[in-house]
Length: 108
Image 1: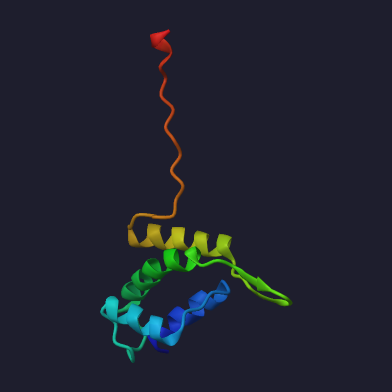
Image 2 (image 1 turned 30 degrees about the horizontal axis):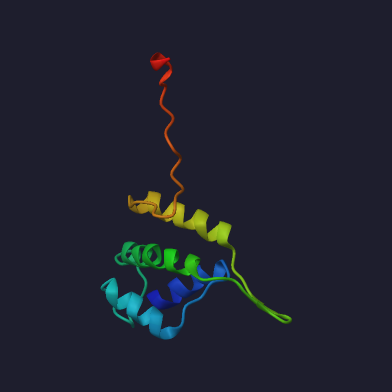
């Protein structure tokens, strides 16, 4: 199986997809050859490629027109992105930061 097929199948699980040109540029940006076979040696590079494309996918709107609609599982892909972040030790750019509440009662 090629790395490109692996990435496509991961995205298809959530109903998302990218076109061939975008996939090719994603692979090149992550130092993966277009015809590279998926293996344990390049699994982390493939995961980093997914990590880099998911925020862009989530920015795309759902399309509904007439009887046609294009949607994908946003909650599922967010959960997968969070898992990728933890596995790779990278920042979760999509996490909602909770405000910190500080005790200032001593000022009263």
